[in-house]
Image 1 (cartoon, rainbow, N blue to C red):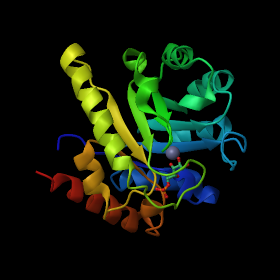
Image 2: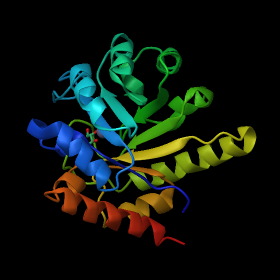
Image 3: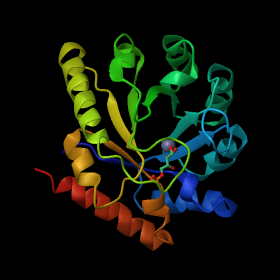
Length: 229
Ligand code: DX5
Ligand code: ZN
């Protein structure tokens, strides 16, 4: 397996010490910071916005992956780009014009990504592959950390892997495949085998207590992926 990007979700971090948590988890071996934005409208929970992103930005040079669970999307994209996002992803159902929103994200200098909830069909990809840098597949319903991995996500990951490999053969461009929800050391290998290269983990990482715990879990996850032949 060539790629294994681990992206801890700060949703499960200690929000009173967020800057320190971001530094600790990157020091512990994480590749990206996954930043979950919820609006109590698109999903039944409310989290953080551009001000908090701006506050954590000076704490790391690692890419910050902003997962927007908000509706509408377009008006808020420039604020997240300005606050320091590297990657911005949004849900298929949260915008009226997917192509326009993908382009808007790139126009603001960020990598763009489309997010699929468990029941969202992959046909949304049909005409926009050229505008996508990352496909984010939810393996839980969006809104909360600490939920269980939905097994049928594995078939969906395999289907996306096929699409992305076919697209690579045609164009030479690789699209990242990120999976989000319920990922932990005991199931990351099957998620990787199905074709994912980027793994979000909130409760599994931050539930490990402290920096040494984060390092242990991240190393364990990486070892599970590396053990795949
Ligand atoms: C859920 C969020 C996830 C979540 C992952 O809506 O998008 O990023 O925080 O948390 P775990 O790894 O605990 O499922
Ligand atoms: Zn997320």
